[in-house]
Image (cartoon, rainbow, N blue to C red):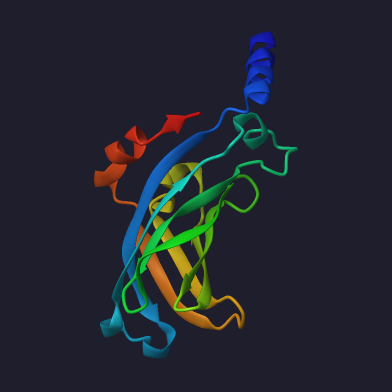
Length: 167
């Protein structure tokens, strides 16, 4: 137990964090064209990670399992590799979800994407950690623009794990 306390103290002092890269690929449907034949490509490539691991693992911290997220989003019919930034929340214990929230701007209009991996349980991790259900809205009006389903592909697992870096 003493060794754990010393490790946490060291992490607090050094404010050590980590970053990892993740790609979610799938499709979206514009709300105005919500028919099965109108699926369009969607992908977000983001990096995320806490700046301070000690605060990130502390359940009493406001940073508990919440970290900044940044990268690019492609939404066919709207944008291509557009910069985005926001947060990734790992709500394993209370809501049983992983929530991606990010904002981006296209032609002067601001958008908000909220995507969730839902029903996170120990027995269904291969499914719950790979499928993200999203909603894209206009930031100022809250109007629904599109809904999406994106996936973490197992074939990218090695790239995902090897992108982990500490600092």
